[in-house]
Image (cartoon, rainbow, N blue to C red; front, side):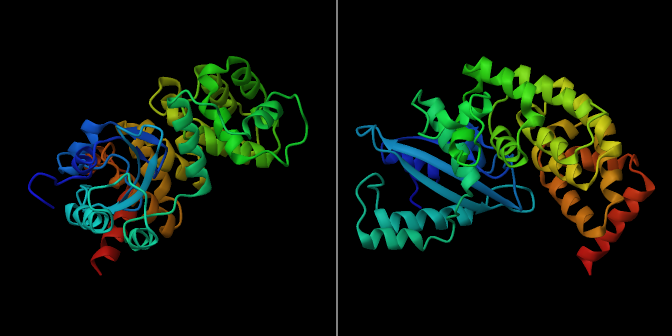
Length: 342
């Protein structure tokens, strides 16, 4: 990179582009330009690592051509401290500059398209990730939802019974717009556990990427608290749907109560989607104890996931330093350490 352009953000600014960066790895989250700049300069660890990677979507458009959008999906490795690999980032930019020069918003030739496809830092998002992102972008721009919205809203509202032709994008559009749809929110809060399992599962996958209104949050917490509800699939979906509310007091209380009796599926959802609710010493110590009781493969995966998260890593190290972990936890950690060293 040149002395004047050393980051993706600077490269986009030099190309006269306005841009927005999204984390795609865990839950869809927007990274403001200042935070992304700090991440690129290794001034802070990447906040949402997934398998030691940062999965990013970069949406941008030329300031003189605001109607033309461009979208990059980038996957960059993180080092052992959780910092973005500067070498990989620079290598990514070298591929882009080689293919496009600095005309990043121009029309592409077939040769340029082929060059870009060879970039080793591209990743293909899942259908769920794409649907969540497109729904969020449309809401942020106050644009109309997709053509699938009406059928999804009609089914979720109880106005039609045929669910087999509902498009995934329609469910994501509904989830992204609940803040502006109080009646639909109320209906989902009342009927969430009554929807057909395939619809409920896809709806939960949509809700975990969007901002859930308080009314629905409270209903989902009550559903999880209900001892009469024995369907584990409903509880898994309800917990996933609470992902955006992980720092709310009622959800933290729910997680504290749930951890000691949670099965492997719920424990996995907690670290993958609701990790902020684990950011308390007692809750995290109990969580590590519970995963230590699982099989070794699951423990290793879940513990490594937890300690990779910048919000939880200092707490884990503090628990270790202060001797506040259970014997089962320490045994599992010693075994993991020996396996890593061998």
